[in-house]
Length: 212
Image (cartoon, rainbow, N blue to C red):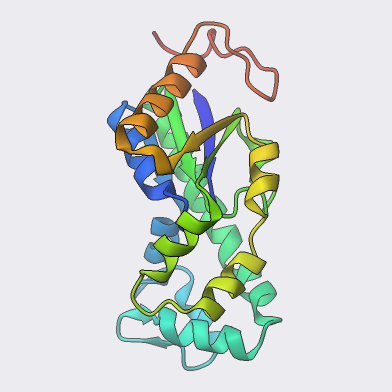
């Protein structure tokens, strides 16, 4: 099974790109969706998050707005939160990967916003970075409900700069040139990685382990 890491800074069009990969037959694991499940009532992260940040959970699980407020008041809290959530996310991902291999999946895309920040790029066969010009990114993000320039700046400060992501990418998807262009780029990536003998960044030929 070929595993691609899909990433991109906020507002770059990563979610749309993930959907395009799914449309090409790839199985997609969404890190944000996994966190949503972990934060929901009864989720594995709720107890630990509430213990670290009292008052941020309620009948529906972790309240993200309250959690964000707690983190803004305590910047060091990000490290505590990551120590709680990241191991649970990795476990969630490992379970899905095991299921995908057992089912004979050919291509798995891991949609991870902080792929490079967490070292996940070393664990995949190739990294796909979604990008767009800074002005397009800013316009997209600031059009979101509740977003402010200050909040946008806070988010960017915790993410690897787009230029650095692109420099470390194996494939780049430009999301600002229209959906058809992005779809063509995604199809080119899929065609490349599914070619017999394609090895990827870890240098492991995939033909022998990929069902035809």
